[in-house]
Amino acid sequence: MKKHITMLLVFVMLFSVFASTSTITASAKTKIKLSKTSITLTLGKSKTIKLNGLTKKQAKKVKWKSANKKIATVSKGKITSKKVGTTKITATYKGKKYKCKVLVRPNFKKLYYKYCSPEVADVASDNSYLFLDSNPNDIDPNDYYYDDDLYYDAIVELLDESNLFDDNIKAINKALGVPDSIFERMNRTCAADGRQTVYYKNKGFYITWTYSGSYGLEVQYYLY
Image 1 (spheres, rainbow, N blue to C red):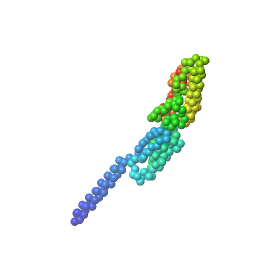
Image 2 (tube, rainbow, N blue to C red):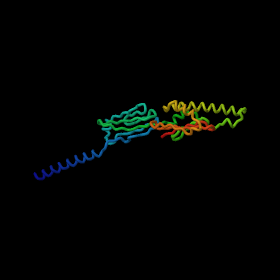
Image 3 (tube, rainbow, N blue to C red):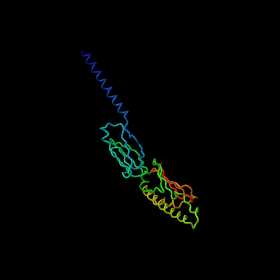
Image 4 (spheres, helix red, strand yellow):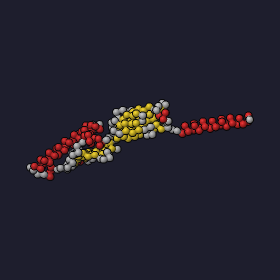
């Protein structure tokens, strides 16, 4: 009888050691990490990330923080874009920090509907670009006689479209944080300068433009 009891105790002890070892091994394999270490958002959009490897109870103890709340805010892993630019989201659990880079890119559709005139602007359905043209109808006053009424009509139309174009560009650049010097540079561009491009990598877009005597100034805003 004692022999059987002894054997039973040994079996129980071995089982306990094996179970503990298995638990430790399983825990070691469960690596805590963010579901995303970098994300790109279109302005106005949100996305949720999480700290993998935690139970629901443990996840409630995670502290979330944005390095720049003006660019993006975070609450329980839900990142909401606020302004074009870059920031970092930090998740802290038991003193260890896990970071995610966030790039907020322009929402060209919203810019178009808020600041642009359809007579001189167009926007891609997939939000990939915004296009503005100072002379959308390609009017060339040289095609008319100087004393012809059509010549003066053409001049008036060109001026109207040019003023619309300037107002649109200024409003868009201001919304995107583009300095006034870029608008001035655009207006100084001549045909001989060729295509001009300015990159804003930390904001996820770039601007390119060209000028010709026949077609005027054409400006495109593109996403990276």
